[in-house]
Length: 128
Image (cartoon, rainbow, N blue to C red):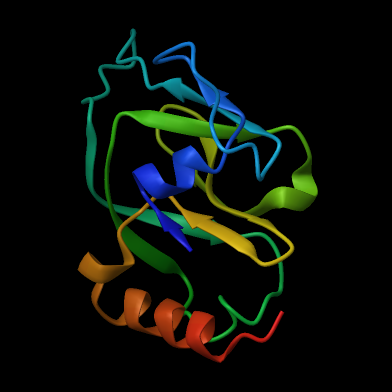
């Protein structure tokens, strides 16, 4: 389970540098641009998370799901099958990614009260 930067490291690489990521999930990490929408970067605070797949990790997370974020980069997956959840902040991005027994969460479950506790409980019980 990769959290925040840990999720970003699971990808193929990042616009931040030239070195590759771990490449465990076919995805890429790009900087969030404040642009014309007046977004604050880093993206900090609570935001809704849309869970896209029925999965044991997220099954007990209350809906609508809200998690705490603190990040300046967003992940885009090459394949939709790798997107477990999405969030919108100046556009949609993958806020949870998955491939086999590898999972990433862009948000901070440890700072997300009951939502994070349910996610950690689901992860602890999961038998891939």
